[in-house]
View (cartoon, rainbow, N blue to C red):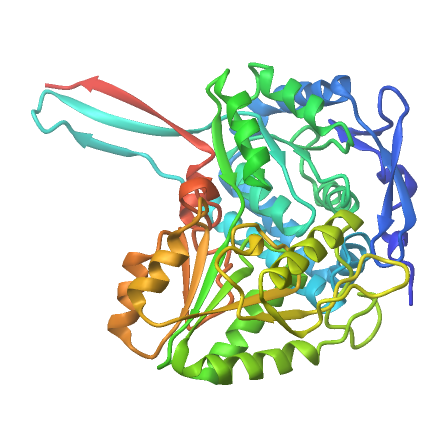
Length: 486
């Protein structure tokens, strides 16, 4: 097994600011660990406020020239990034697995998904349009001109260390914005590698800046307080999102917030159970369940509850657990010990309230942050896991008897990111589409993420959309000119 760290030289484990790879101003570093072993795999620069503002200096200085770069040129650089990621997919995937823990097959899928954002927005870069038309009352013309919003600050999570950065950087660059990305401290290496790849394909200095830090609060706060910052995009918990929104309000920043989820997956009695079980496995276990769009609550209509539960538990119990780089592993390590402890406590709470463990339910001995695929039946409504975001390989199953009942239960949460419905009745599917309070919905499908589709939630699951044509609009302001022309 080759060493994934060989793809990221020590000089590229530092801050990427302007045209330089540099140490933190104070010389501090922090450790990045392999969650499957708990061992340190790298030391990276630990930026402070001065470093963050230096990155903003670089982004601000590069802004005018990048905005003036012809859209076709920006498009070609994004296409080159897509091709480079595709060509180096195995290297990037192995690094993702090493620092994040997911199985290698999942990491390869993330590289393909993340790369696709660069291809999609390479195509969108040349399709940014304004309009020119006669005012309805006549006498003058209306001209609208889209313009890049300006330097953008991105705060990205650890669960998709490539894709979540790509989903923000690609549309920003396509629109003509410069960027500063603060990746999660658990998984900074993949974003540093992306910056290196984009440097190699010719993205100009100052357009993509990467600031790694364990002092995220103070660094990001300083960036948001600076009037040169014009846009914030954050993916993470609702709790942190609320804090950032309050800080962004002081300078009235444009914001895109992709926050927490509490997805309900609904299996109707008329569903094709083979399709429903396959879909539930994807919706629950993609990325080890460490996903904001993971199925958090599985509601099964009473006539098929027993059969679905038994078959689903059998599939979950057959999954293999181990180091993500090992052959045949289906479920890798969770990101850290806090995640394992949280999940263990949620399972214990559900069991104390009357839930039955069908498979899993006990953390294994030994090194690494592992938790087995777990299925709980007869989960009571007051179990904490039905309101908390589990973020791991645990599936609570709850029965229902009517559409009205399950829609009310599914909507009984502050979140509204995604839902899943399995039914062969078209009218029923449409009723769920209209009745569920979510920004996205999978109908007979457990995988809904696609760069060509608008990703985003409602309620306290976020603001704005990422991906699709809507994704580039988040990075554009519109100037309207009224032109006198009798």
